[in-house]
Length: 259
Ligand code: AMP
Image 1 (cartoon, helix red, strand yellow):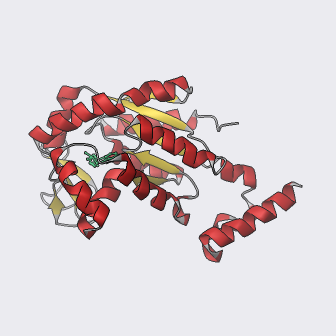
Image 2 (spheres, protein in one colour):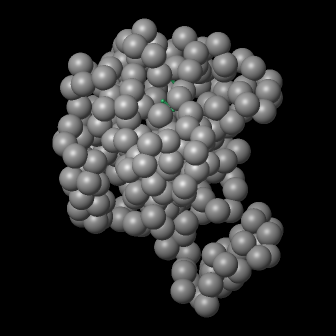
């Protein structure tokens, strides 16, 4: 019976994802249907500046998962000048939250791509209770559920200083900071050698205040939402970047797959 179910699953995956992605996915028969239902869906919660993006990139490598940042997806939509991007642009520049409708449409599209089938780390999503409920529904339709939500705990006051000085390499996305983390050679990325650095237009002291307010009113309630489902884990994110990574790794390694 299990073999039959696996065969159906395999043929469905070929239909949905295409043959080569499905073959990769079922490589050497190592994965079975129950594994598919258990591909991790991890959520990083925390205010702007908590280090979600930096840490998600490290965890991505460590656990072979795909980082999925709705902020990055929205910035790409803005850069592409798509209708969703045009609508989101002013809201993002002011530090507000883009409508659930737009964010969910973008996320759904991204989640349907084959490269994320092995599991994801969600960074910056969900940000409202509506988004969290929509994610639960979306995953339930595939027999999946959120594996764990990790709250990265920080002080608001420190976040303003962190955000106002941060910038990234335009080539590879490596993060730097005017005071806390400068490249070893000025203006040259440690990771890829790139020389073009960029700052986000919404990383100003004024906009940070609005973004923190949006976090406390709209996103912080998700801490109780996931605690109520026994999925919440807390990590102190005020320490050194490496120390926070270590704590996140041990938290994730301690997570049990859902039954
Ligand atoms: P981030 O890169 O996560 O800091 O997001 C940058 C901006 O994109 C936020 O300040 C919001 O305007 C918008 N944004 C990103 N993710 C979401 C989301 N899940 N819901 C609503 N707005 C979002």
